Length: 247
Image (tube, rainbow, N blue to C red):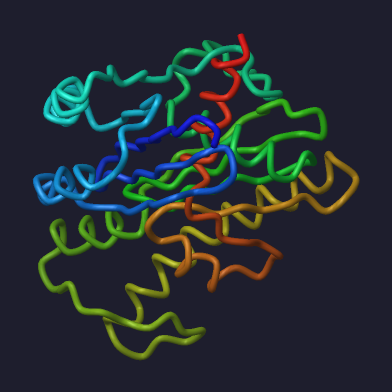
């Protein structure tokens, strides 16, 4: 059996994790930050991994308890930072270290799945749209408020709108549907625009991989070929752990 690696993606809203060996994912789950105490009993039943690697965009206060837990099991969490090059992906950010570690891991996960031009979309609290060219170079991306943030902004900053669940429709005829349709359009348009732009640059249709808590919903709104990859950040972290072991 190969080395066991536990991967951690500490997002703004949720903690995603997965345990893998050399052959496959053994276990994985996602939990919101306020339920973090339920996570530790889940880990107690797992065999001790050989390595714990993670990315964190939620701030230092969110990881203190997790780091302490793994320390009691004899392990320090290896927190990844974005770099100029890793696992076949070149980072062309003006200052490579400023790219979010979760975006970097998702790009690495995507490239090592498709090895061709790719649009990488993360649909979480914030939505990111990142582009990889045919040589595995990250050539730019966008950050937008995600579905939940858009809805919360509308409800909290207006007098008459309420947080009702609406349906996405071409011609909404009630307020809830109008909100749902407006939010969907605001997220779909920049994705499809970036896809067509990347397609023009690449000279062929790129892949489009979507991850994050709203990935399934968002994929259902798009009129381009795409697929949901729920563990994309964890896949990237696993590749980074493999590269560290080989160096």
